[in-house]
Length: 50
Image (cartoon, rainbow, N blue to C red; front, side, top):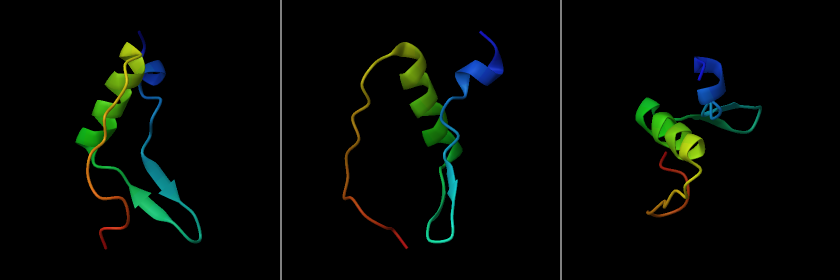
């Protein structure tokens, strides 16, 4: 498997209204989840932390 096909989730959103950069560890977790085809359980309060 090539490196490019594994990194499907980049984790960066940079628009006029939204700027979000995912933590590298979160990005890796999401990419492993996609590669394994397994669900990802996300816990915590929704919303902005800033």
